[in-house]
Structures are given as C-alpha cells and as structure tokens.
Image (tube, rainbow, N blue to C red):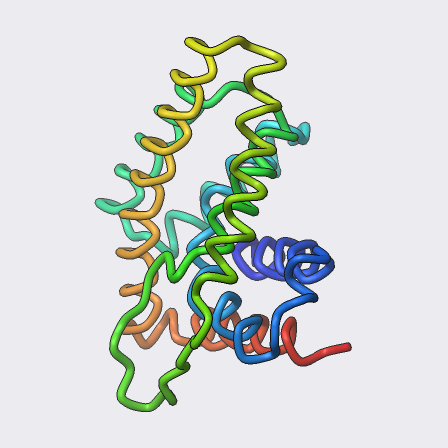
Length: 200
C-alpha cells in the first residue's frame, strides 16, 4: 500500500545521507522511530508535485487514504492537500531539503507506548548542528533564486503547510494504532522503520 512504499523509499534515501551515517546507531534509530512516519504526508506532497499520475493512480491513492483516514479525517486531509498545493511552490530541491531538515529533529512526534523501550539521546546537539547546516543551505538556495522577501514568504508557507500536515498525521497515526482493522498497516510501517535502520 501507498504509506508503506513511501516510508520505505523515503527511509532508504535518508539513510544514505552522510550526516545520518555519521550518527551512532542509537541516534539513527531515534530519528527513524520518531520522525520517519511523520514525514509521509510531506513526502506524498513532494511526489505529487514531481511525478505525473494517471487518473487510475489518483483514484487508487484517494481510496487508500480514505480507507486509512475515514470519511471525516479524509476531508481534512484533502483540504490540507489543496492548501499545500497553493502554499508550497513546485521546487523538488527545496521540498527535499525541507524534509531533510525536519528529519533531523528531536523529535517531530512521540507518544507513550508502555510496550516500547525508551530511547535516550544523549547528544541532541548533534541533530541541531546537522539541522543548522541544511537550514543554511535551504535559506541560501531560496535567497539565490527568489530574493529576501519572497524567501521569507516561501519559508513561512513551508512551515505552515507542514504543521497542518503534522496535525493530520498525528491523528492518522492514532487511528493506525487503535483500530484493529488498521493494525496490519501500523505494524508494517513500524517494521519498515526497523528494517530500514537494521538492514545493511
């Protein structure tokens, strides 16, 4: 299904970044477990921008998200998609840099799971240092292409759109964890994150 393929592809890309490979296995695991699934919607938007889809593919994607989200949540999801299309300019380099910046966060989202073992990250400054490098790279890229004022607008729109996506993403993840009919998807996504970090 679509969320699994997105998670696998995005995780494979992020794992190959030199900045990621320079981290300890504990910190790598922390990032994958806490942040990778929260980037599904941003990556989905990126793919919609960069890739052509046949009508049947669009219908299939819609059906998958409707099944996962449910009718009410899917309306919000669709609304945020439309908003993101208006707010975020079509620039694959910018969007991919933004995803990288978000990935090196501490963390994007965490929830209490009594069955899981707490992961302690001792050197959060490592993530901040990596983020700073990519933030500077993105900002210089935007300045070079768009100038100061337009860069501020673009950056602000990126942040606003992602926060909206994150809110829906949190609700979707709650559904995946709590509904029995969606449990296989939740378990597969968790397994993909683990495989992504352990498979070499």
